[in-house]
Structures are given as structure tokens and as C-alpha cells.
Image 1 (cartoon, rainbow, N blue to C red):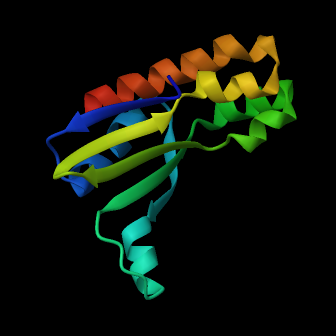
Image 2 (image 1 turned 120 degrees about the vertical axis):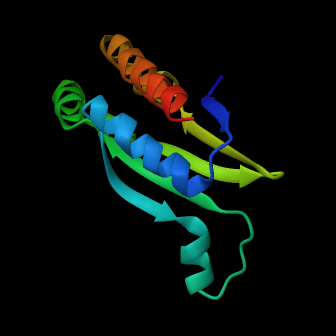
Length: 127
């Protein structure tokens, strides 16, 4: 499956705060917190559900991957979405293991699985 998604009982703001703490524990940081609803509304567009996209990165891992294959830059930084749907809050991401397949560089697969497993652990702990 292309994505990994979990449901949380937390509000979006609380889920983002929890994610930031858990990401830091695994040497990841949030580079950007894109509040989609707020941004669209500032442009005069109505958008009802809350929807945020975190761009997250482990600098050491990013450097190592980019040194192996510059095409990895097309997938960096990793994205984690936090959104509301049908009265529930979800945390999701595209799986790095699926994205990395697009490079057709088998030497990167294990690395991508390690990153994916770390981010799944973070998301599960943050929910």
C-alpha cells in the first residue's frame, strides 16, 4: 500500500505537538508546518476541514541518501499529514519504501524501509 495512516483521538493541534516531540526523539525535525485550511482561507477560499502537512527530515539520513543518489531529493523532505475527515483525526504519510522504488536504485531500498519504520513508530507513538 502506498500510504500509512492511523486514527487518533487527539485534536490536530495536539497530534502535531505530539508528533514534533516524538520526531525529535528519533533525530527528525519539522522543517515546515503547512496549515492548508489557514493558507487557503487567507487567499479568500473556503476550506472546511482542518488539514496540516508537516515536512520532516533527519539531516544525517538525508545527506547520506543524497550522496548515494541525487534523485532522492525529489522525495525530500518526508511528509506527514494530519487531517480531519468525518469527525475523526488522522495522521498519515506516503511510504518512503514506495517512493524510493521510483528511483529504480535497489541500493536505497533498505535505507528507505528503515526511515519508514522509524516514521511509523513515531506516528504510532504520537497518536
